[in-house]
Amino acid sequence: MANIEKLKNKKIGVLYGGLSSEREISLKSGKAVYNALKKLKLNVCAIDVGRNAAAQIKKEKIDIAYIVLHGAGGEDGTIQGMLEVMGIAYTGCGVFANSASMDKDIAKVLFKCAGILTPKWVTLKKYEPVPEIKKYPVVVKPAAQGSAIGVSIVKKASEFSKALKEAFKFDDTVIVERFISGTEITVGVLDGHALPVIEIVPKGKFYDFKSKYAKGGSRHIIPARISKKAYAQAQNTAEKVFKTLKCRAVSRIDMIVDKNDKVWVLENNTVPGMTETSLLPDEGKAAGLSFSDLVLKILKSAL
Image (cartoon, rainbow, N blue to C red; front, top):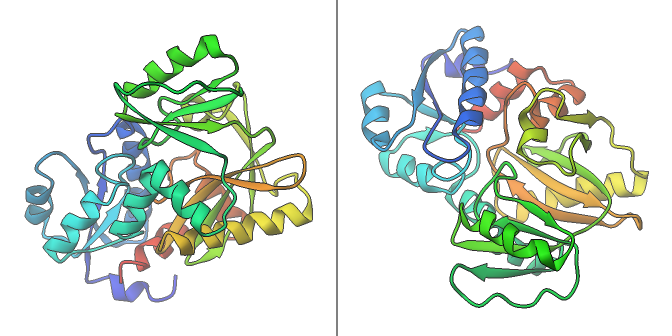
């Protein structure tokens, strides 16, 4: 809890809720963060962000914005850009890291350029001709959504059209990615350093929205049941992703470890969930950080 005194004279606004398809999760994350900051006896208010976000923030006269907005409007660089124009400090990654991470196509291009292993993919635009997919299974997902919204694992050609239709409900651009079979893991990175690796074992077919946020929807196994070599590689890769995308303070990288111990990066999350079933708090706990410690560490990034 060192240096908390520097925050005693600051007013902190927890930005949560928002207008994206991940609103309900953001409300839960935001309330958890707000309660933690209250327990730390800091001057904090909660702001459920709407279309008049600038006016809401101006009215509260905050010094620091603690961003817990998931999805569009929170993880795409837009709220960060607005706060920079307003001259208000904020937690977490900057405009570029958020924008690049939210666009899965751009993120994968950057991974490839940096020599980071990521599954092969094609990008499809709405109303454009659909190319023939020669090898299944594939993963179909909206290019700029989180929380596995609109994601399908397609095992045969007859299922492809339905999966595309579902993904296009949420975005005009869709990623069709080679399916990698293996152990699903995630690694949080805090201040540039990888946290313990979590293995995710979903109850359903894959780590979908229900598995992520329903109680008992998945098991989080720490440390992940992978080889020492793959474990080290996962942490090194997570730190490389963090650096490549110019992240700040915190992010969480989702990966798959295949049967040959290769670590494949799926995506980077710049505003990780902070609910009671979220992964980052579990990783923090495994690293010896209480939820309040984790919240405070992220808060300090704004200084």
